Image 1 (cartoon, helix red, strand yellow):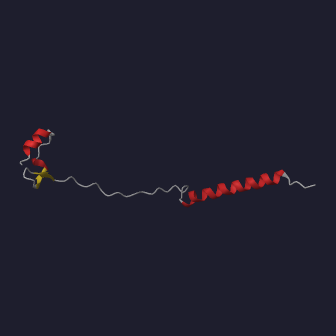
Image 2 (cartoon, rainbow, N blue to C red):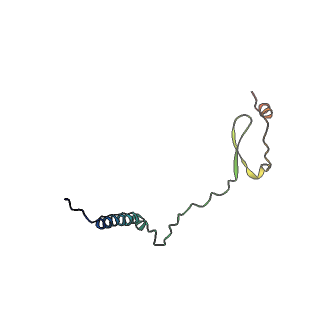
Image 3 (cartoon, one colour):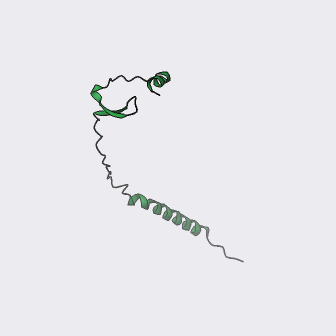
Length: 89
């Protein structure tokens, strides 16, 4: 007859293996200083200042810069017909 191994030892071995795998999975967290309480601060560049001029396209196709203070603040969209009349052929 064959001798059977005790069941309790194989369960203990499996439990040790699972605990070992669990501890190894925690190592990356320790390496990232997860538990240290330090917070990395990302420095950002200051927002760009507001431009003083805007670029506009003239009727003859030239690009010009216009001072923002000279522009009417209410800019309305034009219709397709107005655009066709505006462009000279």
